[in-house]
Length: 470
Image (cartoon, rainbow, N blue to C red; front, side, top):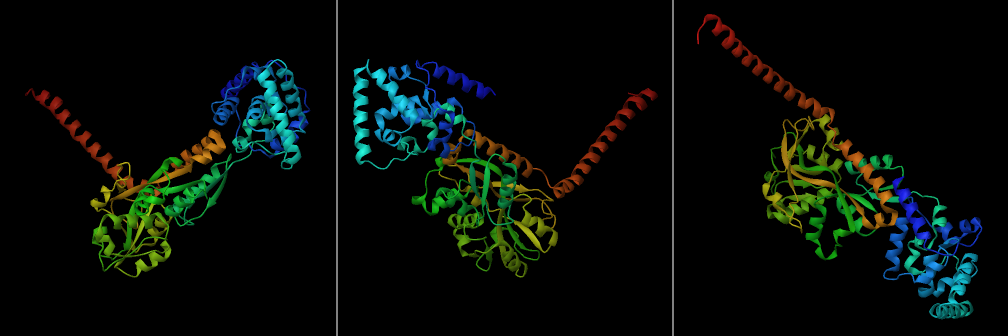
């Protein structure tokens, strides 16, 4: 409401600068204008938004004083736009010469030119160009707009025309991950919560493919592992665009883990050698890229045989061979490990090589954190808490999408993402159950302390005083 009131006040103030009242034009003519009927708005457009967008298009051009002696709008068209087009695009008047609103503007311009020699010359030049275009120019196209405003028709339209345009849902194409994985689960959560934005989910092999699709403009947003950009940049630095093209927000922490058979002698990632095989997820996944980063940092890991395969097949191979392991990067309570935890036969092994945590990105930030996977996260896979390397799952959205659909649509997505983050940080029943004994033991400890202190005070105060001793 405050934004609407401010916008209305701004519009009334701007309209008050103009001296001539707008011509009477049939409202149906505004609705039937091909530019209006084919244009799209994806949120409520305030007049302040329109002014800002016009300034971006018009640049250093400022309306001459005679512009304000005309009307504030002519049917579907903003008066300011028509005066700008007079000096910048005669083609517009060729295509719209049959529009009664443009004819009304031309009549006012002719009237004002009788007292302004410069304006009279500009009108004469325009009319001459339009006559030539009518004879030898392209066929009239009622949807034509100058190239500067074609991508944002709101700039050319009057507030009355914009108000009649129905608000449409913007489309957000989101790259997620493998079906059944945590990224896919987050995508489904986003789709359920985003009423004001149409979500199209694009299944992928994981983070590396997600970031490639995002940079190629084939999706508008993606969930990307935070080490992806750094590793891709080190692997092929000449092919990557700047990160300023995207807006980032952290969804949750992800744990880098090794999954081995229960009877395997592998206790740490540092135990892996030339006799071992490690499965690093599908090609294009964040897990595969993380392993590539490990190989780039330490030649020791290049000696380990590695293979790309989906996680279900990798687990089958690990179950039957104590020398094999599966690398897996995922957030807490990921569905794959929750299901695996109930089956038994596997262990989670920490990725605890501190040398790997020294990696820094181009800005000098540490890429891998050291995280603690709490006891009870996966009861069938871990007997205690595990310290391992960690990354972030980052919500990454194109700034081009934000610019196209506006802050209101962006805010709707942000609110949905915040709700999802809150849900993802809730503890699972297994974690809460695992913490109960610790809480109970703490409770009994303090009960014992209070009992001992109370007994000591009782003995000191009452017993000693009763016998008169000091």
